[in-house]
Length: 146
Image (tube, rainbow, N blue to C red):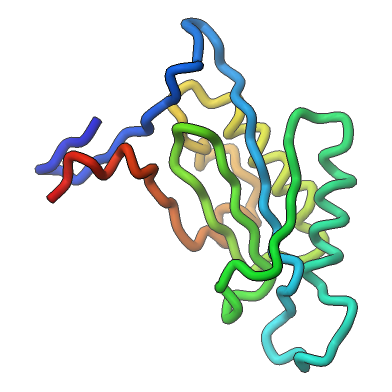
């Protein structure tokens, strides 16, 4: 799982994955309280709420689940979202806008179809390339590190 010398961590794909299965459930978490930098706190509705609604609409008919939370704690980087897949690293994106909804769903679908548990960088929409804040390993990936 972990190559301590290089620091490379591999996904800990869940045991429920079957041999030959390439699609896994992916969830997009959108921060509904996000606003653009410099926007007054009293501005409602929040752009993050609009992004959450647009992402749900963009995901309609797909297998991507869309949820929203009140805050992802990434306020200085504008509208934010996380993309999660069981047993895989999670991705956090910022500097999004309401027009990023389709990009989030496209990225989630790429992630769902990934056989190695990572979201392929090369095919990601531009908003997800430039807006990447962090990749977060699973707790299982960290058990070998001291």
